[in-house]
Length: 250
Image 1 (cartoon, rainbow, N blue to C red):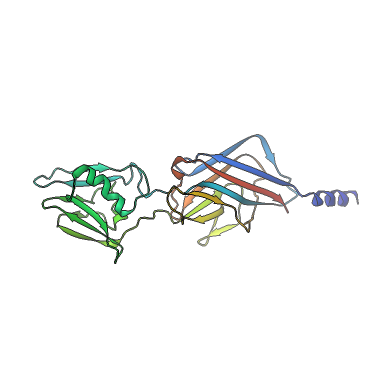
Image 2: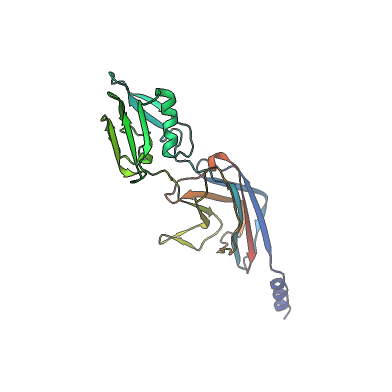
């Protein structure tokens, strides 16, 4: 009887822990919180984990330094391939024209969006070439395949422009289980769509909390990993983020 009373008393005062995790996400999309004291949850009880708040900035680039940040070209009367480097950022088609114009001047190479088809139009002055056959170009953003070299005056891309590199952001947590994504188990705690303008603040407080079982009852570190729909790490361009997580006894 004493054991039943003890259990009932504990159930009437269900344990709730709130964790605020803030900081800069690594290039791989990882945000880790270390606890000097081991966080312990009783094995005889079940606990559910949920995300109650996320704050950050909508900083999801489509051009990345040392990955797809180059534009290669050659000038009239020369086969010497030159390059223009772009800084990491989220570029619309019209923005790509600016560094090229600054480097080459007016009407040498122009890039526009064809509003009717969603494809890119690239116009070259006589003798100019554009090289999309290099690995670190942003050809996919402009709707081009690899191994393409443009040399004609007017060029329309074979595919529509792909200016949104990350459509959805998944926040994964290493102390939970119970989520299924694309038919496979995952540790996704929460996800949200990339639907606001580049650089705008993000403040997300879910009205209906998604709860997942706590599977690690003792831990000194809690790790969140931010990925997009292709599994690429998201680091918000090193802008700080804030995540609030609730662990509640059920």
